[in-house]
Amino acid sequence: MTGTNTETCWRTLCFVPASMTKPHIIKSSILGTTLALGLSACAADVALDDGSEGQEVGVTSAALQLPWQPTELTPFAFESKTSTSGAYPDGDVRLDAVKIGDKTIPSRRLATVARAKILIDDGVDAVRGGHNFASGQGINSELDDYTAEGPATIEPTGADLKGSLDNLNLTSIVVTREAVGTASLEVLFPIPVNTLFFWERGNANSPTTANSDLLVEALDWRGRVTASYKLLRSEYSPTGIQITTWNGSFASPSTPEGAYPQLGSVGLALDGVAQRFRFTSVQEPEGGLRDDGPDYKVIGGLIPRVSN
Image 1 (cartoon, rainbow, N blue to C red):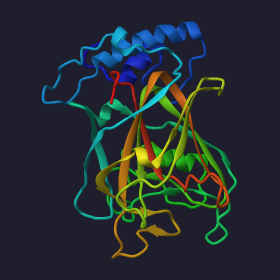
Image 2 (cartoon, rainbow, N blue to C red):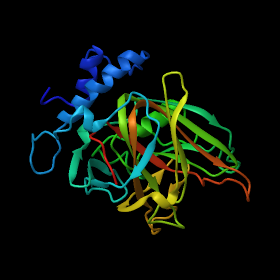
Image 3 (cartoon, one colour):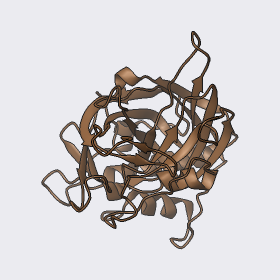
Image 4 (cartoon, one colour):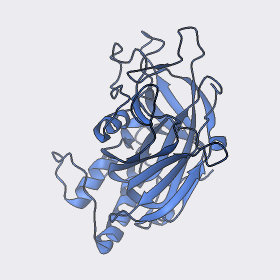
């Protein structure tokens, strides 16, 4: 299957026509095992832009070692390759590739979120309105036509948050405010993935690093948790990528002369493949559990096994 991409491999294995845009979850464990082996071959065929265009990764299904359901999530570091139009310093920031070790994976080989559903968002922002979730974009992203972005709203629906995540614009993020409560989002990727790439935005008090925690859970087709990991703010690496955020009500930075927050990044490698994930943060009163409102972007991938 040389020359095909990950989604094409997935559609071929599942007999899904290219015109079908809705993701489907495979429910048969027998079919799942078969698909895992096939997806391994697909991943081995993904060309990496590492200076040798068209060169195959050369990873076999045994090297990938992918069961259908993951049981473990392992953090790893990666680099982000980005670009901008240059027209607006507070506009779009497009992800062009990620680099893991000496391998560069172009963004066309990655998968953005296909569906999102708010499971619970019971915090109340008594000052600005809405709950904890918001959809954010760069302050001038709508004027900057360099790449697509999601909406800006402090009262997002699941479709709005999906819109924040279904693009390669790193200014287009899920914002979580810090009212007491729980904010939980379930997402579905268009293909099974074995890797998650996270970016988390700092704030005025910690502009160069992530400042929040997030519980990440991989789910099976019944919605049962098969693997989980609590991403801590200390596990993100500074990227040096500056972004701004406008959510329809207030901006970060709050003034034009304010310091631009930067993104931290961290990856999670699965020991299997999954399509469905749940991301949850909790904010309890002082003295309790406080994840401090993660503002994040997540993108998936089906790539050769990574290690840190």
